[in-house]
Length: 510
Ligand code: HXC
View (cartoon, protein in one colour):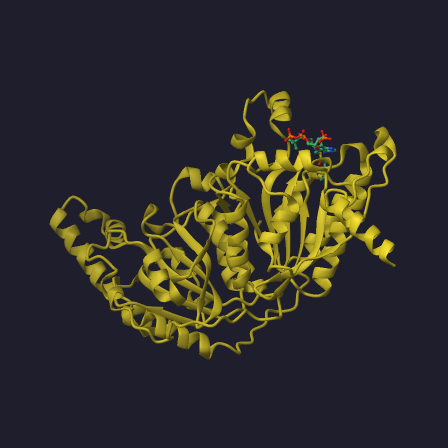
């Protein structure tokens, strides 16, 4: 028996070494951790249970039968993050560049199937060179089956991708179908075809970073939800994120202990809105002052900054926050902001996370660039997402709620459960100046007359009471009491049951 146990230990040692010491050192020299080091950092200490450590590829082409490395380029298994079960796979770049073979794909599928069957989140750590070139269609088939599982699990369990090295070819589409993608700055990049192919096909000269680094995907393409400075920071932030996420679509949100009392008043909010209605203020100040312990996990913070989305907690329970940001483009809704928020609202709705919406929006952004870019369809995505959402929805209008954007931002008309306004709210078809100039065009030559018209419109609509008189606003609340109002609202809505008519699936304007 002793010999058998020694043999087991020997085989484990070999597997743990992946592609060997030299390749591990090369990985470290590039500022990257190995797959196993990453897994250790991500999971609770000692909680990792590995599967399929001895799996080897079966390829015999191109002399592959002579090079077999146990594990075949991906470390898979399960463990816990702050005590809660997660499944994971981590590409091992030291083994055939982490490339995907038929057996490598089967290892990933096994954890995907287990995660779905056992209704727990799955996290993929990517650092790989795409399809195993020596395997041809066997690798392509493997990818296809991984993709299918991504789709079947979508909306049932959270799926998270962290890009920690190269991620090209077939490797990009699995992350693209997960809920969130995070990247490590300077050491990771994602693209369908790399710089060499780009040069051949389009004659553009770009570096990997310029084509698909974190700096591009977090700001321009919006493929990635956040970038982090190094592997350690990325993995620790994933632990923080997982604390916000439900295990699955029926588990309900996690509940964490909090020292923050539900009725904490915040008198400084009474002066958050500047006297001048055209002066900006930072909506993140409101978010930080309202949520538990100012703890806010922002998603896509570097993209479409005119809208802010992310996770926070109220009374220890996860909520999704969506907020117009008056500091950027006056908080206007454009195509990018609409898509960003729509995707976030849909994630929250899939996973029964209540949505809190802070509104200060002057409308949709006018212009040919927006119209040619499909603003109608992109704006409709957000309208669609809010309208179909059946989770508790609490809306607070802090200042402007103009035009179509008023309807879109979780208004009463699209099933907002609780719609509050601060006394500073202005709810109208448009700003007073624009309105007066259209209604009284004939008087435009007379500055005094037109000013009187503007004042008249301002007086009539620059308040929350016209909407409150119709019941579109449930109550006009004191800014200092915002946290208490929202917490109590969430308590009242905790057993909310709302269902949409049966359908195979909807047809959101893509
Ligand atoms: C087999 C691969 C590999 C691959 C890398 N390696 N990619 N082996 N299949 N796809 C191996 C290398 O041979 C090398 O082995 C080791 O991994 C490290 O690779 P290097 O090139 O030395 O590393 P580096 O210079 O850092 O470059 C990394 C890289 C580059 C940018 C990822 O290796 C690369 O361009 N690889 C090919 C990428 C690619 O075109 N993949 C196919 C995409 S098509 P040794 O033994 O020397 O350590 C695809 C189609 C699927 O994925 C579509 C499905 C929808």
